[in-house]
Length: 253
Image (cartoon, rainbow, N blue to C red; front, side, top):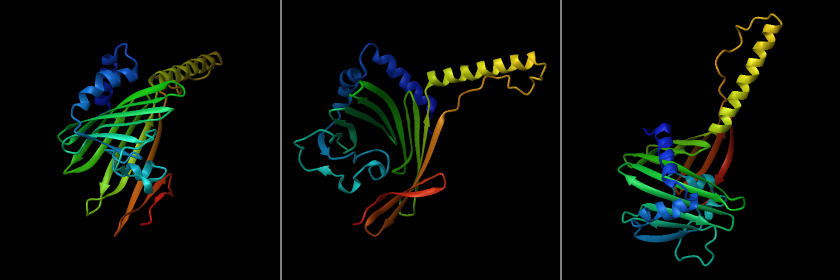
């Protein structure tokens, strides 16, 4: 199974490759051409319908019942998704642009492993980031997904029913920022040092005060999705969090 450390190294190597280029220039000029040569045809969709993560559109779309591949290129391309497919009809390039954001995803296939690169920018404040991902497949089924960037580790695991349909997804989002976490840890250590000094001044025992540096804790969100099916296909997806259940998506067809 792929590891966070492996993806962190991939991310570090890409940052070194980027050099003095802006992140959008790095993706457009240095990375995109190597992926685009494998594209055999382009299609458009009105939502993010082709994702390596199972049931992604049902979980994340605001209107999954209308999400679909378009038969013709749209006149208004803002917020639409443009997919570049290879000769095996696999997504190699996925992109979306609007007045305020840009999203570009690049995929490479290595047997049962899908390696991904992701660029996203917020034009309103000129903020952008890059992430790397790996998606593992076993016997034609997606088994594990892992993505890493400078502030988050995002992973998903999948369970299947007897008919080979995804019936449970466990997603864990671990938010972190190395610089912020290091600064927080140093502040905690300074607080402990002052506490020890004050206890010594008062003649109190300091043995019960931690001697090692206290590391800042990352914020972790774990979400579990349960998918239900009927004779017509997907019926609904329930999101379970903190022991409660709320309906995320309902399709009647």
